[in-house]
Each structure stands twice: as structure tokens, then as C-alpha cells.
Length: 244
Image (spheres, rainbow, N blue to C red):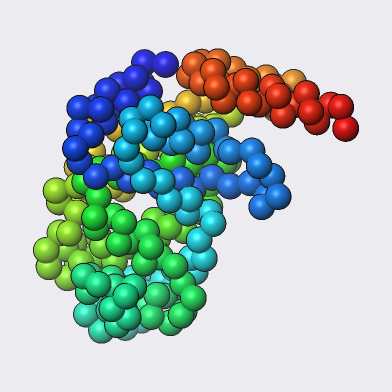
């Protein structure tokens, strides 16, 4: 696929930089199958020989508390909201009330990885015409990064970082999802090169909800991206499942 090659080539040229992949699509904990978007991230790391993947769906991240719109005004990202645990917040940049109020919250793992990275790419699934709930929750919980410079007038911690998104869906609205999320990244203060984002969607027929279509889409996805090793592994697992 041309857009994947474009992404790969861009990352290959910048392989001296720190590359972070944040995967947000999920499966049941007992299911060994990787979601399609996570397969793309996994294959890129294999082929690039560099890059860090964080599976956000495995982290315990509490919901955003909505501190942007309280009766006290916008209190998101205030200095008073700084996470005081030096191990979790070595830079002192993490200022999120939900991190302060929930001791088991693991947003700090994502935030610190973003601070260290030069290029950040989010991977996830399109569900009901928008990004999946894990991705949405993560973006909401990172609002203090945008609020820091947009509302509080402080420095933009993301101004030198590049950001993109890879979204995988079945039949509806994928291209619009990419446009929207790239606009969100710009609000956050990221740079958004075209090469870092793309959408894969099995069909443009939004009414195609057939069982056969969902069965065919996975194989077509693997073939289109030429993920031969992954396809072979999937065939082996399918044959073993049939024998049971």
C-alpha cells in the first residue's frame, strides 16, 4: 500500500530519531490476535529495527475529570495539579488532576514516553465512525498538554515533535477521522507531516455489514499490506482452530 510505504520511508529516513507508537485498539485478554492497527505498528518496528510500542489498552488510565469546564473555570494543567511523585513525573511536566487523584493511574507511562520521543504515531480502530474509546480517553487525559500553552500561556512542550495517526476501519468515515484527529494534534501543538497519517478501510459501502465481509476483510488487509509472515501465522492458527 502506497501510504504505508510513504510512512515507512519517512520513518526510515528519520531512524536516528526516537519513534513512539501508541496502539489503542483492543481484544479480550485471552485472545492472542493482534488488532489490525496494532499489526501495522508491530510490522513497522520489525522492518525499521527501531521504535517503541506502548499498548495503551493494557494500561490503567482513568477517565478525564472534565476540569476544563468547571464552575471555577478552566483548571486543567494548573501548576497545582503537578504529579508530585518524582519517579512517575521526573520532568515535573505532568499536571493532571486525574493522575493526582488516582494513585494507580498509569497515564504517566504514556506522557513520559511522549516527552522522550521525537515522532509519535497513534494507532487505533474506527468504531461507529470515530476513533475507539481507548484512544478518545487517552486524548482527553492529555488535554493539559494543550491547555498549558493555549490557555495558561506557558511554553508548548510539543512544538518540536511530529505526530500522526493510523486508523483502521471496516466501512465508514475513516478519511474524516484522520482529518479530525490531525486537527486535534495541531491544537495540541504537534507538527503533523502528511506522511505520518493514513486510513485503511475495507469498503466504502457504509451499509455493508455482512458476515462474509467481516471474514474477508482481515485476509484482504494482510494481503494488501503484504504482511506475508503475519498472514502465514494467521493461516496456521486458523488450521489449528479447525482441528479442535
